[in-house]
Length: 389
Image (cartoon, rainbow, N blue to C red):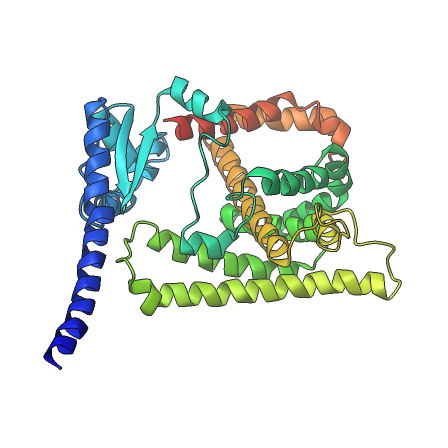
């Protein structure tokens, strides 16, 4: 009996010992080994801290940077948005090693190395896996997928937004902009929060042009995606203790799962409306907008071309979020720069009047807007410069 008791006691002890060794190997030995190897090659960086990596330092620096207002004449955006990168580049050089929890991150800002990474094959530099919160926000859409699946879904997106398709969207965009400007006319003499106004504008335009849905349906999705973005942002530099999430999910993760399910339900209602129109004979097909192309791919009889229901929902989330967030920010930033630089504002206004007069803008005339194109290109170049820093 005593021998049996010893065996029963030894089995869990042995299991615990093996688990402990594996844990220390993954969360201590491997990070320290990576740090040592790269340091011997001249790649320095902030030291690895057990389990948490550098997340605590990053969170502290970002909080300090965000607490200090940035003067409107100050163009030092990079130290404000990424204070940890700015600090560590100055301290450790253009290329350094940092730690997102236990995951090593080789940060490069040397332009030649950046070019090498961007032009190299996907098999050499793979996309990272989304975190639990990123997965709820955009799912397994174009941002994270690779290989053949990426090529198939990228082709759908390209087809939906090629030149001719964009021309066909112009009337819907014009109608939304006119509605916004009419609203502004009643606000003469008052301050207008343009970022919020452009958020409403882009929500309506994307809902109409890419998904053929009502503004109300789109606004619900945007509101929930915004909540998911906030949840993700406050968790992005939080380190999860290994294995804990499997047994006890934090409140933010539970809320993000609920929001993701609600978004999927709304998207499926929009898809069903599109399908019902075809079934009831109200339409010959699912349409040529982005949603129509996705539904066609979802219903495709050819297995190679078909996408799953999960893929359809994830691509919708990606384009709802990315389409609004990027355009909204670009519009607000452009208006801000024009407000600061009155000379450019006057040049742009004079050019628009010379080309269009009292007419509404049209695609042929838009191509002739050289000054406005410069403004757009300079904004894009600024974004690229910040990324490459």
